[in-house]
Image (tube, rainbow, N blue to C red; front, side, top):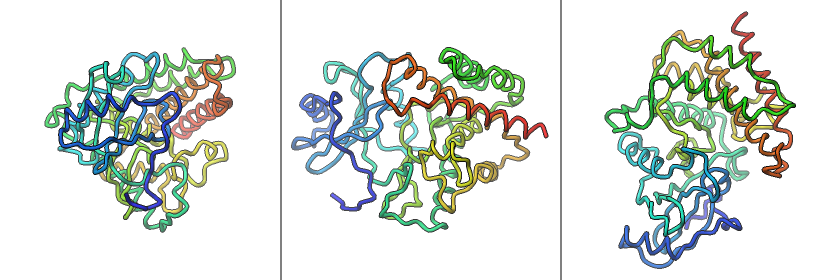
Length: 357
């Protein structure tokens, strides 16, 4: 195995999340008869959503994705959907791993799971590895490559890829506004604003024209795999659980809600989860301008998409805080999420005011 210290490595399996590797191994060898030996198993960090493991055989490695244990929300953790989407996408968008096998036999693990190619590389999380030193030019190239990759995804011909039945498509903007308005209202606690002003503004200011394409809906640096030898190059895009047929500018707005730039205030900096602060990274406005230029879009007022992305993130944060508030989780990291919800809604109002000036 390579000794490159920048490569993202799996860790020992977390307690309570072990795999029945004997059953998995037996099932996988029926699908890939050339496999020999017994695999060792490790697990990747995160895993708040689907659990991700590395199966290391003597001569090859695989990634296994499965749903977590316990009660699942309707439509969530759909392993078959995730598998078939990436399988269809691979010939036209080479940044997805190769899919090897889908298991829907619950006698193996008690849940659906799939096995795919392991992309060996660097995943850029909050901070780049200490051993990695990228120049400002390299960082700028990485930033452009990220936006180019998103634009390439949005340009995929969904009919040709056989993905036109992936989701409803038309009416996406309306469904997103009403869906997140409802989710926020259901998760509201006494210490956060109602959010009604922003929900009403979104409803009244939705774009007259809707474009439908394949959207990722969680397109961030920590869902990318970089070439360890040339870290400004992207070799993979991970985590397709939320992918759907949606509006491309809303996909970009969702990404930019997480984009903390170098001159943002301390509250934003405290939430940073990707290296968007580095010298050479574009600001959010520069990202929008670059994306629109790549896709040939002109006269775009991005305010709606910016506000929606922030409102959606406020809804996500509030859903997490709701669970903490009602003692459904005791994770101390969630204790002050209500403050972040205030902040995101303030950012929404600030963007609305700036548009009106």
